[in-house]
Length: 410
Image (cartoon, rainbow, N blue to C red; front, side, top):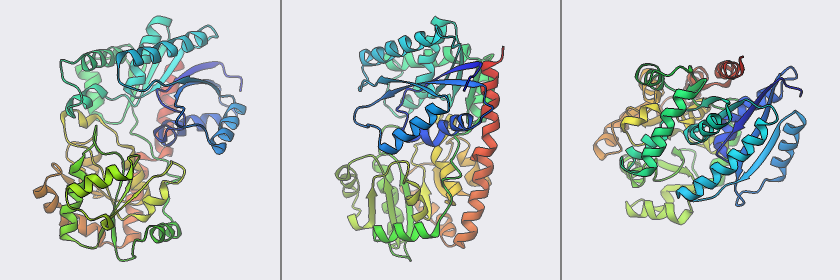
């Protein structure tokens, strides 16, 4: 591909991190598959030796390189210390500097951490910046008690987030709340593009055959209702509260089963559920890469977003919501989370609670039960329709392309 517009894609992640492949990379693959594409991409990622490429992933990289993609792999340094982060920033700066000498003048980043690093590079190297999925990561950490307002981590991150927004040429985020902050409160000059986190709607297409196979594999009976949670415990998410939520619902309806797909070790998850008195046979713990995770979505009947409420959470854009809906799953969510809670209530695709407290969860059970008692084919068809309108690739891809065009315009 002989592109006349050169863009550095800077990701502070592994290339095959599920959050990359199921989100941002959908747009890039569409560029690579277009023979008339005039934009040349050079990818920079931070790889982890614990996750070497599989044979299938290696073949995908070869295909993308044949389509014109170039790739620089940097080494990720674990830990939250300022020294480890400085090493990562320095290696990124050297990589971008080399590309600047080759005529690259634009950087697109994913997420606020990569965005703040990209801002530093652009200021030093006189480049233009596109912040994709820009959200206040520092405020999430504050709301969840990970950082204090006086900590160096919060103060530095928050300062750089605001500076990055003020410098950027284009900014994409998933909610009207972020747009209002940027345009009215911060008065940034960047052009804003509303792009909720996209769902791979070609992957998350319900299959009754796969549902039957997966439930049989897990020992889940046909008459059981399956609650589904693919995610982590703690940090930006509920910890024991998720286990309590399930226990309170299980006490009301013995037919429920909880399906958990998580990166946590089985024993760690078991300890959480043991501590609230949930028997091991009442739930399943599985681990999955992105290639196979849709199988567990298909096995479920109702899904969970386990994000605690907080002032900053209105800016978040949960990738799982789009995947749930495209699969045909209604969901439980706390009030004030993104625009997702609004869709749950106003589009009738979910149940909203104020918090994962006993009184809230038990009060929500009749509404959850009403979804479980619906005709499953009708429920899945309706949820998927809403999901395609809200998070479908075909609807969001033109907006992403417009943002790249804004970045590379003279």
